[in-house]
Image (cartoon, rainbow, N blue to C red; front, side):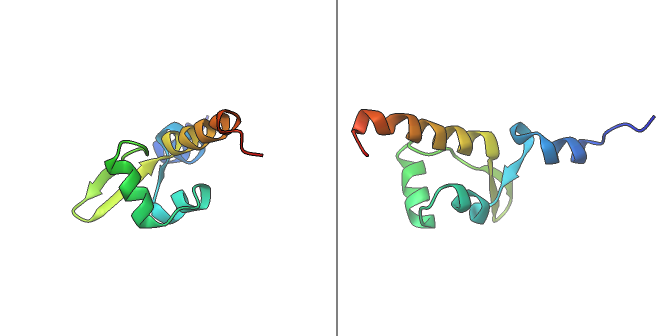
Length: 79
């Protein structure tokens, strides 16, 4: 019987998947500066520090943010 490795689980489970900025921008069509501005204002998820000059976002947090924005559109009366 073959057991699943942590890397295999991470590839299928968005709660443990990290996204670099280009991947985030595929889901959120905002420029880097706007994403960082929104993070500072507490309006966008903060990334996880991977090293000295490397960060990534938790996929579920980004996707939840997108879902929240979609849910809010009815409050904004955007058609």
